[in-house]
Structures are given as C-alpha cells and as structure tokens.
Length: 526
Image (cartoon, rainbow, N blue to C red):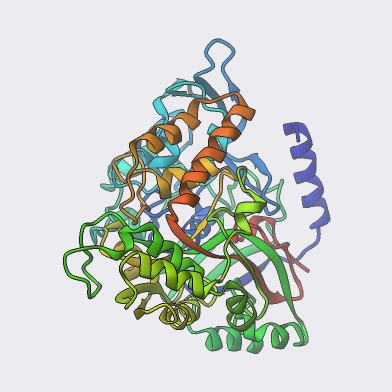
C-alpha cells in the first residue's frame, strides 16, 4: 500500500468515527507493563502500554500492516544500498512541548543499541545512525539490510533533552533490579499522555490534545484507565459487572459466559505468538536437577523425548478448551520462514520417548524444576501443570515453580533457570527476529532471550548474514537451513500458537490485533 493510500485509509477511518462520543475506557489484563523505559524490556504488555504514550518511526496498525508513524516515508538510499533514509514528520511535539526532530531519533536508536537494551538485536546490523538534516535520518548498516523498517515498529523515540535532564540517557538495567526515572515517567509524542502510574495497581493516561494525528485517527477514547488484574475470575467479574470496559485475556473457561452476557462481546483471532519450553543444554551440570556431575538436557535424545511426552492435543482440548493450535516450531504461521511440515512435526509417542531416555542413560528418569509465569500467557500455569503429568510418564519428575512474570523473566535473562516457559511474538514477521533473540549465542548484541546456553559459531554466522542478504529467494533458503538446525537440535519444545480472545462492551469498536496490542487511537466508542 502506498503512503497516499495509507493517508486515504486513515482519513476514511476518521470519517467513519465522526460523531462517536469521546469517552474513558477502563482497560484490564492479567499483567502490568514491566517498566516505562521504552528500551529496557521487549515484552508484549510493556510495549502495548508504551504504544499509547510513545511512537516509533514506523508502526503496525490493528490489522498488522506497516504504516507511517514518526516517519512519513522511507527507503534505501539511491547512492548507497547500505543506507536507509527516513523522512521525519514535521511539526510533532513531545508531551512537554519540546519539538521532535532527527536529533531525538539518533539519540533513541543509539540508546536502543546499548548492552542493557532489550531491543539491541533488532539493530545489530547498524553501523551508524546520523542526522542528514533536521527531518532526515540515515541508518547505515553493515551491508544492505532488506528488512530494516520491519525492525523499527516497536522502537520508541525519546526526547534527548528530557532524557539528559532527568538522568535517563542510560537504559534501565531491569534484570539487575535497577529503578530509574525513565522506568516510572514518560514523555512521548504519542496520542496519550501519562497522568499517573502505580505499578501493578493502576495507570492513567489522557488524550494528547496536541497529537499530530488527532484529525487522522478516531481518537474517540480520551482517557485510559489501565488496571492489571492477575486473577482470572476477578478479571471476568470486573467485565461482567461493568467495572472495566475491555479485557485482553478472557479466560477460555469463561468465553461462553462473557459472549452470552448482554452488552458484551468476545472477539477472537489467531495471535502472532507461540508458547514453548526452553532447556539449559549448555551447562556441564544443572542447578535444579537430581543428577550429579552431568546435564541430562545436554543430550538431544532427552530433549526429543521430553518433546514427545507432551500431548499438545490434550492441552488444546482440556487446558485451552480448543483455543490453541498445536505447534512443532517456535515460529507463528504469520512469519516468513514458517514451514507447515515443521510446524506439524511434534508427535506424542511415549514408547519412543522412553526408548530415547533409555538410550541416553536416563531410563530411570531424573527430576528437574520447571519455571513458569502465572500472569503472562493464556493459562500459562495450567499448561505447565499439565506438562508435569505428561513428563512423569517418561520418568521426568518435574517440580513446578510458578511466579509473576516480573520475577520469571529475569531468571531467563540472567541464566538462572534450567527449564522454563516462554512465549514469543514476532513484530517483524520474519524469522531473523526469532534467530537473533533465541538461537544465536547469548552475547552483547544477540541472544538476550536465549536461556538454553546453546552456542554454534557456524549457525551464528548464518544468522548474522541474514541481515545483509538482499537476494530474497536465497535469504529464504538460508532461513530454512537455520530452522533445520533449530529443529534437529530440539532447541526448544514448542507447545502451541495462542488464540486471542478480547472481551469488551459491545459499544467498543475495534478488531483484534494479531500482535495483541490495543492501539486506542484506532478505537471507536459507539
């Protein structure tokens, strides 16, 4: 779609919303944003809140299509294929009135490339970011990068002057437990301004009256009251009683009750996210097992056996009430590189799994701890509980430790878990994103979410080469080769692709976004 067509579409959306009443929306979901620092945590609910307050250069709309945000146009330089040129939107101001320009983009992208940033993998191919003029930014990469704009859809822009004045130049070290000004305060260019913030209690936003897109988007929501409600029954009760207007995660057991209630709707769509288990296969010995002096997860046969013990169809029918799609690879079907044969490859086979355990020398099994979040994914703890019983069938005794995501995620980032649940969405819609974060050796620029300790220098080189391969058929072949290694090594145990169930008052006008990010500037209130 051309930029002209995008403007026409946005104008049409605004016209359709004409006359809609301006209202408060009371929004709830299981977990809160982890931080307001826009580069500290690459995590769904965290970026979902950030999208209301801050903006990237390009973004994805509610359908998943890439559209202009703080950049109005972009493309490779005619003089140098290693350079992407972004023309910035003029006349944009931050919430405090400061002008937005190229200096802020250079600052923000350089900040996002620092070691504590959870977005650095997306910019790993960047050689330099520079301001060509006040409203033109050049991003030079090490070789032509065919998907650089895809990597920027959650890369939020900060005001350089505000950051310098408030000690927020450095990214918050979230995993290290650091608390900073930027973790609790925000000054963006987005459609909503931060009024108050009580982590895990309530966050209040109000409409930005000076928003550049005020006449291009419905902007029917003038105030957002965001309340994390971890308990599923309490969350549903709040929707049914009218205490909240919109919940992003209707529990599967309550779908019928919500859908059947007067004045409420359930809207469903496949999500661009896969749920899986990770295993520490790199350490010589594990901290959380009963095997002394060696690591059972280092043997690919054990990893394969554990995958075979998981009955994904049973999880779908019993735990998820049909609201999931069993997975055989850690890529959602939305993503370039997804392979139907690979994704249907996970089979439950207890007899073969027991044979593999015997071959590997673990016929009598072993015990291990499974770390699981209890407020992040749909039925996350219940999935883990089901896996405990399934793995017991092959002699793997699992001790389940479920805790809130704020305590769970640092275990992965800090390499303090041997066996864990993780979910992964792919905002770039390309496999390179998965490889950079989850398959590449963990280091300064790559692998920040690779808790497996897997390291393969040859594979690392292939992953890094994707960033500069402009021959797209050849690039797709490289992606397929990398996936084959990931599959053969059983790096992860895929469980399923999530299905989104948004519950809301019937007067709330929105579709379900595949990235599970509600962008309220698109909402109507009828």
